[in-house]
Image (cartoon, rainbow, N blue to C red):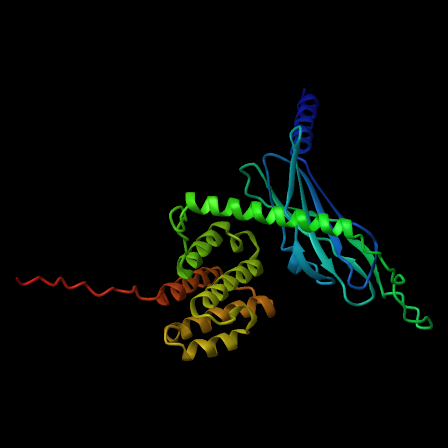
Length: 316
């Protein structure tokens, strides 16, 4: 009876693991490239519906190549399996033999909060120099050729272009009569920089990156939001500046002086995490979000108050 119970328990456990399966495959479109070629790196995930996947920041994780861009995610479903393909474009500007490292992908199953880790396969590629024949002569790809003029074809093309232009002008005038300027134009909605920044901070807070172990990614995203806000609010290139350069600019801008101290503490903590591999306490991560919101709210421009229109009474 005990053996039977053990067998049933083992069978149930095996079925549960099999039902909640996940797999990942890393591929490149080739293993041999020349300097400057596009290197297409793809992660293909197969997993059940009740599995939640958290991808690592591939842009920061693949240090051996130069990141260019990320393509849209290709998502599909076969039976009960979800298939997602994440494609990234890299390049390399030096000849070398490099290995794209194994990436760790975290995931959770159902309502279970325990994070599991799945590793991708490493990929070795070779980047070679361009082949140049230093002994050869400089010459055109093809010799120039002479194309004889076909006057009949030129006349037909000219007449066709005139007819098309006249038809387009007629349709344009007809459209303008039916749709006067400004009548149907939709008003342009401009979102103020502070509203956009506060919305992004709220969205980042909901991701709970640092609570799930992605501390460096959390600090990278929150500093980028603040840098984007400074760039839009004060019109200087904060995304291209160091933390010290940003503080220097804020110190002489009227609207930015009030947050110099807060910004200095904010960027100091973020730089320690990103560049010195500092592991902050949980309260430091919370303070980063509070400081970011404080920096934005303290620099919201004062509303413009229009002067009242004085009514002049006509004296008869």
